[in-house]
Length: 461
Ligand SMILES: [Zn+2]
Image 1 (cartoon, rainbow, N blue to C red):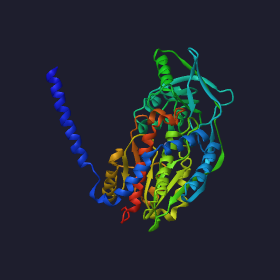
Image 2: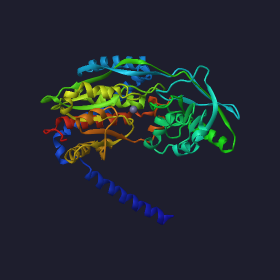
Image 3: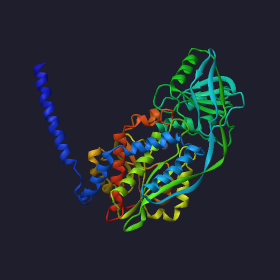
């Protein structure tokens, strides 16, 4: 024991020495010396209080969810314009965009045979409803598209249940997007989906789905991991499942919405723009605190702090709260179309839509010279731990503009441990977000956008 304790002491000492050596190396890059004063002030102001968290709390407590077409979203847009004006930001405006207007209505699912059990569910966004009174049909659990194809015509008249474990958003979300039409192609009358997310506490995850033009539209809903596993076990015991599904969901005519933006106009090159983007809409469950109220408040706060500290960089920094990312992307498409003539002078677009947990750095897509520059800028963020520049960056809302204008793009990278547990669920509420993490995200966005806007040379593309 003693020898082990002595060894542990020596190991601890050398670890401490190693940490010190690392810290010494991890200071700001020498090229960042001209920006140290301003960025220290930005970081200090961001970390000084919980202003960002308080503003996010006010947004989510007051307006609740913000699905496209809802009063919550439109009320929040009016509020944001008023608050940005009160913050003293310039060129505050709401640019009109028409958005899809899907409403959920009442909905339920129940296992009716071989035993009766409620199934915890959420209809998928854009789904059609069931006929009045619901549908009742034999349900068949499948584990993959291959499994679906193998059963083929035997699925006629059945409700197909996709029980596909979450192995990452990319590989699993295809079942949510196209599962209904793939099942409808074999004559299925309904589709249930194991929620696309990490296991939670019997929490269903909604999200967008689309219908193939050449297949009948069948109702589609997500069920919890726990309920999917239960249906699987009963089927595996050789018993026949019968499920009743009832959904009032419907798509109404397009509604009017808007992208909200505000700026610090550049003092030398006001026509050159750095965009901090996020999406202001959310799903209609929970309050969209993480997806993506937090990203919006963090981006907005970054700009507000520049204003409050009297920092006016050479180029314009613009915050854009995009509308309707979740079930239409009309905000991102609308911005691209309305700002077409200006895209060539967009220097960088940053999206924050991966949560506002402890920041780690940024993903970046751009040329090597620009990458070296943003790497140097990130060295100013060692105090908040956000120094890593990842291989690629971007986001859904900025995507259309980035593509059309070949604009360098970035995304804030954060500790993602909790993100896909609460994503698109009733549990997406502000209590999951530590105020100090949100403050660090604000600091990261403020420093990155300020320095890119202040560099003597425009970031290359
Ligand atoms: Zn989002």
